[in-house]
Image (cartoon, rainbow, N blue to C red):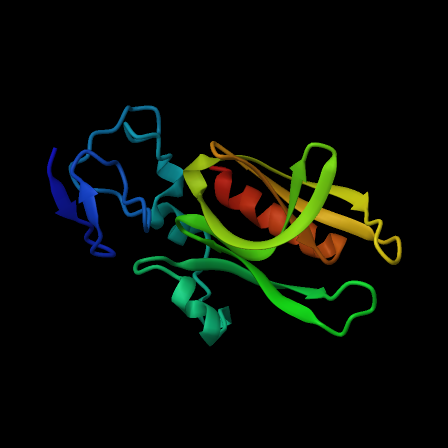
Length: 187
């Protein structure tokens, strides 16, 4: 095994990798399984070229302060703010967001965490590589804070577990879920 530079983003990648883990660019000469995947399990419909053919990149829609979260060679395909208001009529809030690129779903959002019978919501950020996503769904529940309100959560299952991203409205949740499902669907 040798390390080579990705022709798209310049990251060091194994010459046996089917695609760059940073930007999704196929690695020239990498063998495939013949079943629409590289030996590392990267589906051919999730390569940068395949996603560019299906979705137009939208770099201009990403605010300047968030562009630093976009990796070299990544195309942003979807971006949306998740504006959250502070609890108990607080004037505080935070600018949270979700972004889908040709390689991953990245977020800065409030996540639901369950420890035993206790549920808390924690602001967090991270990303999930597209080939690792096995399911995208949504749930509706109710908060039990100062006022009872509906909570919509985008759920993304991956090999690392499930994250539940709190969304401000059902429309936000449905829109993000439908876009991620469209990216993952090879049709």
